[in-house]
Length: 393
Image (cartoon, rainbow, N blue to C red; front, top):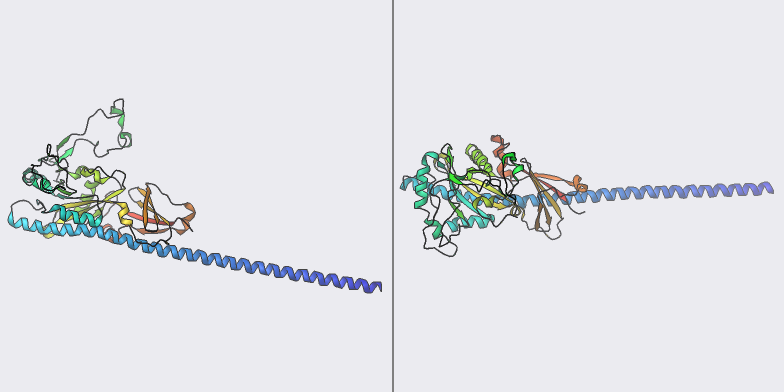
């Protein structure tokens, strides 16, 4: 009887153990299935996020390409218009090509400015050094356009301009707002108690005759504002090639016959437009042609970077950070929230935890790809890449 009881207990224990093992196996299997489903779910979610982000980046690239096209097309239209004037003048006058005065300049340049949302657009003829005196006479004779195109209507004054192509004597102008020790060995520089240079303001002098040619600022929009009592337009005939960046860009255009995009700085200040120091800007320089692809002048349009990123994305679009980098060592970041673009500053603002989502695209590739395949470009022009990152999951 006792043996029977022991066997009964032993059998019960065995059955209980089997049940525990069976339940444990079920629990483990359930956990494995759950982990599998979770892993699969997370993988699908990650893929969906990647796919969504990729699609929105592609959409944004299309907006950017369209905005770039608008800016370049507006300058191309101006270039074509100017070429027709150049050819007309060649038949009617003995002036060198490029010596032209665009009629109704506020309308012609204003339309291009409005299309590209530029801060300023300027026309600069290509003046060979042997024609510098002739240009001085031409610009003085034809300077009346400045008074005729005033915002409030024609002004009954004779504009005063430098009657020669001029430059500055030093780089106070070129490096305005930067510390001297960022550029020069300043052991020999002197300062007053307030830190101002004792070398005085940079003097305006005739451009050196040793230059092959000059690019004097001639017609621009907004038109320089004249004072009836002192109708002096100081920027007219400033040789933009006095500056390092335009000097390199124009040299590259002479070889490539193609427009170029410049670096990141306050280029509006080049034209004495002082209202936009806090706007991150770039500039496009576009050639003007005469006969047989001969370059006779240039247009420069100063455009806020923000304009290239305007879009009509929906309010449910993913927030993202775009980091712009170029081969000139410059970087800046902007934030996209819906269709709102905010420039964050000249630094890399993306969150490192989103590095794995990075998407890279070249900027203005439709203009740069063919250009750089023909000529070396290092140190001459800046090429940009767009780095896209999500800023939320």
